[in-house]
Image (cartoon, rainbow, N blue to C red; front, top):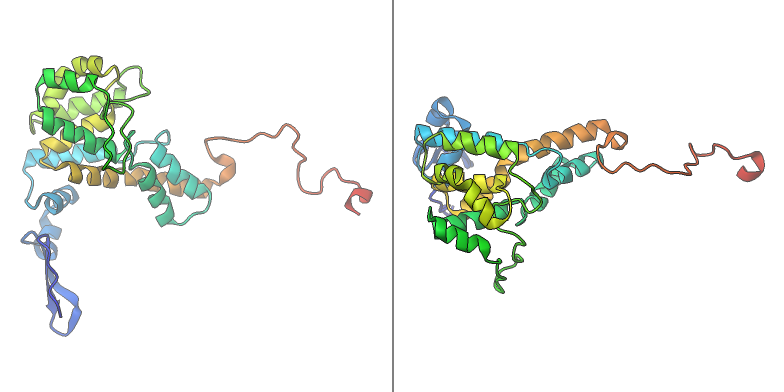
Length: 271
């Protein structure tokens, strides 16, 4: 049997079944003999992506970010898409795929987080470079399948001021002492918002946190998609139970509702 080549995972087959693993190692760690007993979900997630165990500060930061992103709420377009799937009777997989598709874009989605992380790599904590970059209009890249974003990545194109959840998340994560980006963002937020002409968004906080954790922009994009799925799943299941009559958006009220089928019709009409 051919070997499976991956730096992430190593398996040894059962002696009597070549298709079943006797042991599994993730970046050298015994998954079922060690990690299952001693590691948390967040620590294992960090290990999968980074290839090394997190420090205590890194684990606390990733856990805080995961909690902040877990349920964007029904106002979020990705969660709304999953809810539409649930109320329409779609399969569980379809609801999650709807959330992933809608939550993948460059306006509040995972692509925006990636773009914001790329900005961080280019500008660092140089306020002047951020002011210049935020003032410039995003340029189209003919080689990219994604259109140029219509606003500075990491900022809310519809916001009037920075929302409470964004400010609370930033304050908490910046206080965990894991990397320079979040504390700098906390201190420079008014200046950056003035330069962008927009308030900071949760995508901007997520980008700074993921950078401080050592993730690449591609890894950050993938993690943002993953970490926002729990809320989409929960809301989709709730709407599936409620049914379309209790769907919280876009109720249709008919001014000339004929009522139940057959109501108001006389014998001649039914004939």
